[in-house]
Amino acid sequence: MPLTFQFYEDSNLTNPVGTLSFTFESDGSTGAIDTVVYFGSTDGTKTLQALSNPGVDPIQVSVSDSAPGSGQEATAVKLATTQAGLDTATPGAALSLGASISGGVANAVAIWIRVEPTTLAVGTSNELTLTTNDVQEV
Image (tube, rainbow, N blue to C red):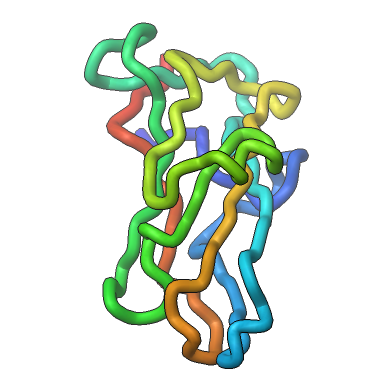
């Protein structure tokens, strides 16, 4: 059965996120780009936990790169639960969301994303996606 928890563009959990898309200028003038997505489930009866040790091990969010060597690399992406947290986040590191997340729109978790351009190629980078460790709903 598919999970009801997923990544969304909005806090009302209505528009699922596919790939992350960032557009950069070749002269480097774009600089870092910050955006926010939300992780949650519209089903308030569900709780998400890590499969490895449910209710104890953390749920981890990381960035996957479907085309390493093209566009921006996953190692150029910082994740945090607040925009201010991006300043001290480690590029390429997974983000821990705690041992469990309750379902329901009110419990959606904001995930801030900062992409620091590692290449000065002009264009749109859309090969990056957000993933979690192995999880289960209870």
